[in-house]
Amino acid sequence: MNYEKSVEWIHSRLRLGIKPGLMRMDRLLEELGNPHQKLQTVHIGGTNGKGSTVTYLRHVLQESGYKVGTFTSPYFERFNERISIDGAPLCDEELVLLVEKIKPIAEKMEHSEWGAPSEFEVITAMSFYYFAELNPVDLVLYEVGLGGRLDSTNVITPMVSVITSIGMDHMQFLGNRIEDIAFEKAGIIKKSVPVVSGVHQQDAVKVIEEKAVDMGSELFQLGQDFSAKRLDILEKGERFEYRSPFQHESFELSMIGTHQINNAAIAIKVLELLTLEEKFITNTTHLKAGLKKATWPGRMEALSDNVYIDGAHNPEGVAALVKTIQERFHHKRVTVLFSALHDKELRPMISHLEEAVDYIGFTTFDFPRVASVEELYDASSHPDKVKVHDWKKYLKEKIKVTQEDEILLITGSLYFLSEVKPYFLPLLENYRKK
Image (cartoon, rainbow, N blue to C red; front, side, top):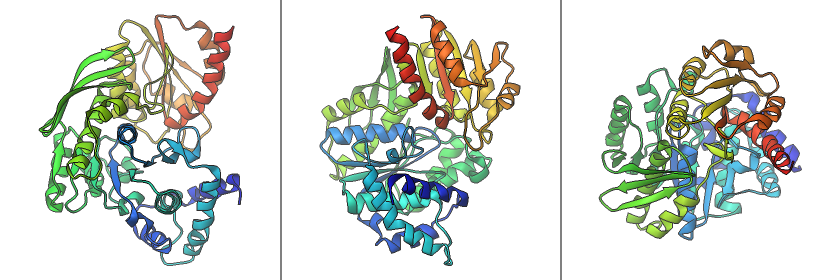
C-alpha cells in the first residue's frame, strides 16, 4: 500500500458510521498485543477546550524535556496531524506501516461476532500501536473523540483524567440534558485516578462529583480547588494569575480569550498532579515558557492584523467567541463569514453571534452534513446579512476592501476553517506584495 491508498482505506470506514462501545476496541487491541497497556497517558474529555488543553500540556512537558505524543481530532490541514509527537505528525511511511498492521485484523473482524471497527476505532488503535511500538514516547495526551464513556479512547487507565467543559453538542448521541451529557463525559473517570474539571454548570458538576466519589477518585474543580484570574488583555494573548495550594504565580498566553485562561489553568493543575506524584517533573520556568509558546490552529488564530479564524462550532464555543469580540474588538466594525454543519444548534449559535457583529455572511462548503447557505441565512435575523455562495471569491474581494478599523472573522465548523486557511494565506501574501 502507499500513503494515498492507506488514507483512502481509513476513510472508507466512515460508511460504518459512529459505533459507540468498547467491545470491538478491546478485541482489536487484543489482536495487536494490547499496546495501550504499555503507555503512560493523560485523558482529556469535554465539549470545548480539549485541543487547547492538550497543546498547553504538550508544550510545557516538551519544555521539561519529555517526548510527548498527542492524539487529537479532527485534523486541521492534514490527516497525519491526529497522531503526533512533539507537535510533528507521523510521517507518511509510518502511517502506511500502521495500516498494513491493522487492516487485516479489521477486515477479519468484519466477519466475527464483534463486527467491523469504525474509522475512529481504527485510528485510535493505530495511535496506541504507534506510541507503544513504532515510536515510543514518555507520555501520550489522549483527546476524547465523542462523549467519553463509550469513546474508543476510553480503554486507557490514565494518570489523570480531565473534563474541560460541558456544553450542548452531539446531543443525538449524548442526550438532551446537561446532566446526560455530563454523565457521558464523566465516563472517563477511572478508579482512584485523580480528575481535573473546568465544568461550571452546577447540575453537571454534581454528576461529575458523584462519579468521582463512586470511583474513589479525587476531584480538583476549577474555581474551588484552584483558580485563574485575568490580569491583563495583551495585544496578542492574555496574562493571568493562577492560585492553588501549591503555587501562586502569573503566566502569559499567546492564545486569546478568558476560556483559554481556564484551559491553561486546567493544564497547570494536571501538571501539578503529575509533579506531585513524581511522574513528570515541571517547574515554573517550564510552565511559563511552555504556556507562552502554545498555539492551536483555528482557535482565535490571527491570519493577519485584522483577519481571524475561530472554530466556534457549538453554542458554548460561540458564547466564548462573542465574549472575546466584545472584550477586544468593541471599538471596531466586525464582519463575520460563517458556515456550519446542519446537525448543530444553528439558530442559538447564529442569534448569539449576531449580538456582537456588524455584518454577517453565510456560506457553505463541500462536506457531508453541511448546512446550506439558505438554511443559515433563514436562521438569522441580522439586519446586515448576505448569502455567500462562493466563499473563495468573497474572501478574494473582501481582502481588498477591509479597512484598518474592521475585523474579518471567519468562524463556524473546523472543517470549513481547514479549507479556508490554506486558501487564504497565499491570497494574503500575494495581496501584500502588490
